[in-house]
Length: 149
Image (cartoon, helix red, strand yellow):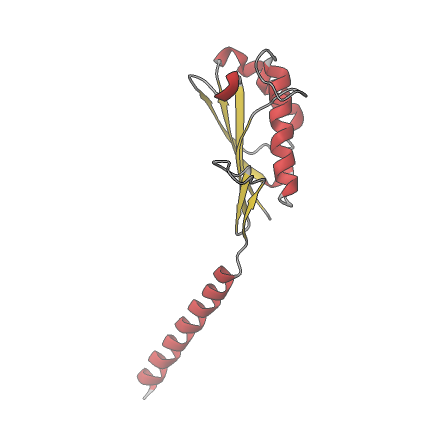
């Protein structure tokens, strides 16, 4: 008798846990940030409590990246990441991972100077990857992942 009751109780608890998990997943937030119809991507995407920020470049006030230096492009790329993060209702301190795509490894020291000033402490995990080229002749592109605490 005890074994049957125990199995029934275990099944009931498992079912309750699955239902609770299912209802949590049903209400999880999924939302595109900065999507423009006809464009091939969103600026960011919220899945649950996680925000994925698409690669952001650092154009000047005229929308051009060509001809601008790495310091300005890094400053503007981080500002673009911040804009997406805040538009999504997150904070820069919620960023847990950053990927920096850079065209010239000689630009890394100047990029790091700007990055250290503009990214809040503690700094998120980061990968820096040299690429053969970036769209529009950009020198840098930054993507990020943020998680609400």
